[in-house]
Image 1 (spheres, rainbow, N blue to C red):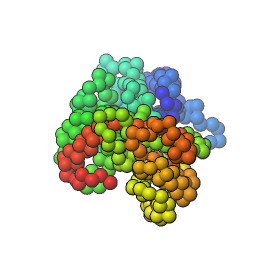
Image 2 (image 1 turned 30 degrees about the vertical axis):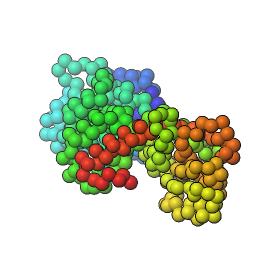
Image 3 (image 1 turned 30 degrees about the horizontal axis):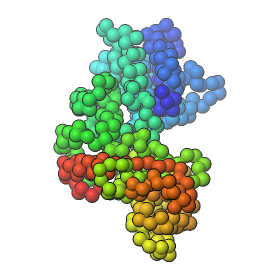
Image 4 (image 1 turned 180 degrees about the vertical axis):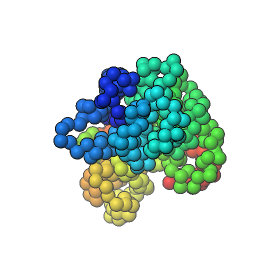
Length: 413
């Protein structure tokens, strides 16, 4: 488990009732989550004498991913628990902040009849866990741990988790429907209801634009086509690079402090002599950076002149529309290699003359594995990736069908 993936804020009112059920849930939950290497924020251990508790709580919630609210009769009437839930509900929508209410000795109706905000909103708009009937403390804790410890999502890189959440926000939120459609993707892993849309989004990415992805789009077509066109285009832009696996894409990100800023994308050996396209190079980089423009800005450039015309090449490269720069963002120039070693070298030289820190991803045909390729470039490459042309063609056909289902132009920006 990535310790930075889930940070959990536990909201409770148990300090004046150390032997109560809510206290037992708190202690068992804290113990189980810490075994899984979650970061767990509990005021018992995090607040110190003299701390400005309101500020510390705001900061703790702002840096957590999930808020678990242990709501019993005591907590229902504690102003500081209300304050914590207020802060959770006020998190920016872009964070996709998850709140898990746990009702202990309370029914949803009792919470609503109390008329206390924000708890009324919590039980009417958020899926909750109840400790009632035959369900034990162990059962409630296991249910919460199951949600947060989802095998599929708990092992994802942080960047990929952000991408999953972005896609999940664009899907309908009915857990039962999401669970049913997740079954299309041939996985025997259970889908936790509280993370149903995230699991479905993850399975859509992992399917590499296979037929179930189109089936999900068609099933929810009415939901998508009633959204505006930019919404639909964004969805397609987020799923389009998924025909490339993370294992294929991740090497294209240069190692930290790497002095060499040239990577090579080659056509994988196959039945076609056609090279992988510059668009495939863009997809490769977007997949490697999890479609997050805050991490990497990618621009294509083609064609490199067929002959030695560096003055024209530099002039044309200056027109690449990078847009406003953002601190810490890596710039990737996906560069068509050209047919001759000299033009390959010219393209790299011109790009690095204009932008010394830019990463050049050179898209080339099957000869990328030739022994003298590094000599042709004039520099060794930090990475060599390869993609089958047939995979690109299959992905292009799948995206065209999805665009038709979404009633948008097939040219994906």
